[in-house]
Length: 191
Image 1 (cartoon, rainbow, N blue to C red):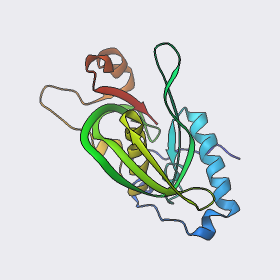
Image 2: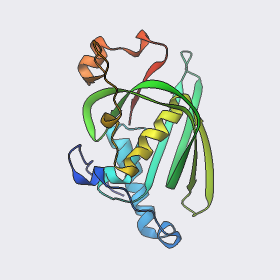
Image 3: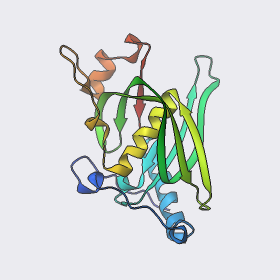
Image 4: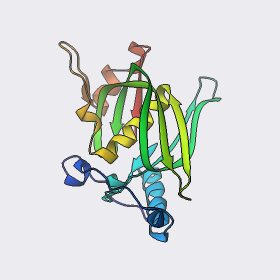
């Protein structure tokens, strides 16, 4: 396993549409090594998800490992470590919700992004078996953010600007002036 360098905004790999893997490729040792590197890199950089293009591999693979705790410390929303290969996303509820998103490929920046609040992800697992996840709320945003990387899209492409508002900020200023508590429909995502 290896910690890989993360591609930063401006590198062409982040704007490519990732290639889908064949069944043979999914079952290969190379893909297993890639996934291990993705997990190790995600953990090293403090992410809750990472996509293969973020470590310079333009293939349709993403990893998500998310756990949200309530005020009392109990787990209220969780997505155990999940490897998503060749995903297809379907919007189940197009009512939008906003979260302040961050990204390993766009360090020290946060942006307010509105996305559908409920989605279904159909994908293949590491055994090349079809799987399905229905994600709502913040978890839906997490999946949409990570899967955007497979289609050459960064969260900064989805930031919505409005007169008199600051929808994008450096992390330090965000923490000082733009806390998500100001609006019940706005939270934070940093992958």
